[in-house]
Image (cartoon, rainbow, N blue to C red; front, top):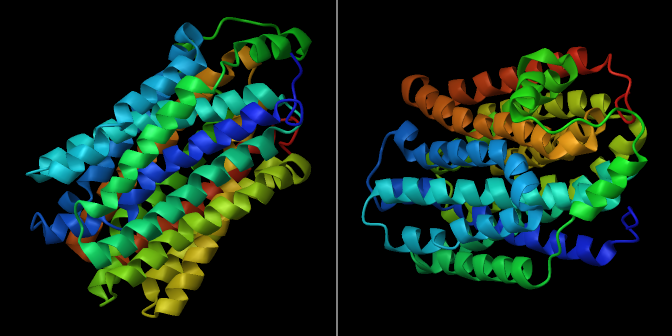
Length: 408
């Protein structure tokens, strides 16, 4: 077995395609579901309208937490296939849902799908390429996923404007789920042998069995470097929960048509996805911590500008900056976790990091919805902007002392 992107480009490319379908499943909802809550189900409370993000975030966080442990026991490939089996019913449930509770349940299934399937594409790519091109590999993985999120968000919004909010936009989800499962079953191979190859060549740390309780402690309170990464991931997805659930309602409240809301909803993940093809590679060269700190500050500024603006073009510019800031952070944090732990513990520790990161989406949706209900959209948006800048400063302080490749 040879580690490296060039040596394993065929499997790598297939995993990129699989993650594009994973991203497409969640992208369908970004421009449609917040509006569906109001128009089809008569929900006026912002907190209730974004409750589907809370169920999604909670389910995804829990799936992330156990994905690494499950992959060590059952193999990466089997966990990937299981993720798709949870995702297949989602578009059907949304299409036929008679009440909002069904939408919440569908998003719990979608969260498990994303937690298991996306986690495995991350871990399998890292297994294939080894340590030298980790940032580049994760940048390509996240780029594929979030470019697909953007494309699906745009298409769903356009279809909803022309055909209605249900069922037509969600036919795409049936295609994405079927294609992702077919690739995973028939073409994807497991990567356990590549992990053994890397372990055999790793002399930086003594091998020890993976332990979820130990990894959870280290990434949550014990190891400052890992804690700094976990809190940055949490806040990054907290502001993504705001962008997903509150921004469409905010834009509609300012009089925007749904097709223009779709453009704004797609711009942020489009820039986020495309830029990651460069930012992951840059973090291999320039270091992880500068990229993380600068990206979090850029996100905070972009969110603040969105909240104080009342112009479509300023919103478009702000969401472009938000996408760029997120691209600087997203693959870099994953690569930073990979830098810090032994290959045998990598999947488990990444699962803990992704647990905290995706818990942020639930917190952001609930916090944004409650603040918007009580104080209005502007106060909710500015509170999250300030929290994002603060998180970047905390990450810079907590992570700067660790002497690791790419962790300058």
